[in-house]
Image (cartoon, rainbow, N blue to C red):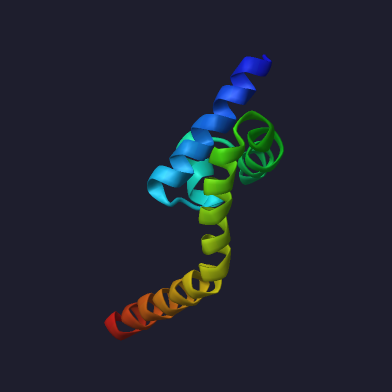
Length: 89
């Protein structure tokens, strides 16, 4: 069982780096929870591959710095859609 978890942690890390992915997007692709992705990355990966962990951490830090921008874009899009629906009604 341990081999499966360790393999998953490395695959998650490689995916995040390759796609500059967020924890949420990575969880959706792998069909697991955000909590599982986060735990695998922060708990298992540093013990398995410190270099890979540092690269993943750098991507996740950028994502964290930009998350307020993504949230603002989502809100803007929501209200644009609502406005478009209202105009059609």
